[in-house]
Image (tube, rainbow, N blue to C red):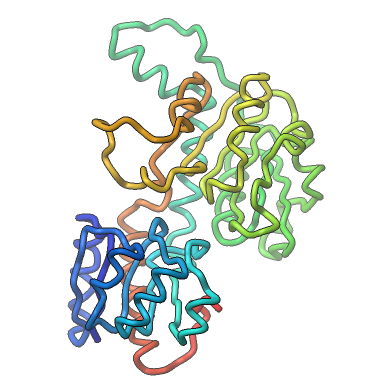
Length: 329
């Protein structure tokens, strides 16, 4: 089986190369270029393409992949909102993903963001480097005995709930499907109740039609004053203009984002010498109580190893013609 990898970073190549020793009958080619309608023709002669969350796997891209003879799209990520599933189905192209690689990695990063922005660690670090040891503007609040609101209690949300429990927090949760493993220490409430009562709100839900811009002007108005918001899921869960309006109105004590709208061109790229097309990042970073990281919540050694193993196993499952819960339909 021949697989062509798009948007390959050094760490991708390293983790997959290590795992490939267990799959001697799989031949791969690593490309640095991203998968788009214009680069999809590079897949000619390959059975499958492997792409990440930032790839453009739209109707146009899939049409080209079909002409190239590709029958499998391997996603080395959990999210699949960048894939035109209807077009893939029309051409009989299967789409397999990695639904869970390290829930703890993402949850730990979410808490790291919450702690860092609450205690202004990003500001304190820069200050001390300049020999400024003053404390003005660095005050946070204790998480102990505060209320954490977890929106989405799948594997990542559940891991975040357990972390918050370790901090001695009361935990509220909102999800269409309640997780029975959390019932002994998590209270499920309506979204409005969670927004009104939580001191920390952490988003861990997928991006779908009913979650698009879940955080907007109306839902922000329902939150406590001084709430801390963290998003490590998908940028479009939050309507950025409304978030900025809320920050300016001093609704938030802090905002920690690993994802944000219009991040696409920035994901995993060094653009320090460029003038960015959009002002979203600059506008958000202009606030002293906002901290943004580079879509890195998943980025641990354990997670990369799990992604490589599951992706290659997905390829073998496809080759054997078997069914798998990892398939997106």
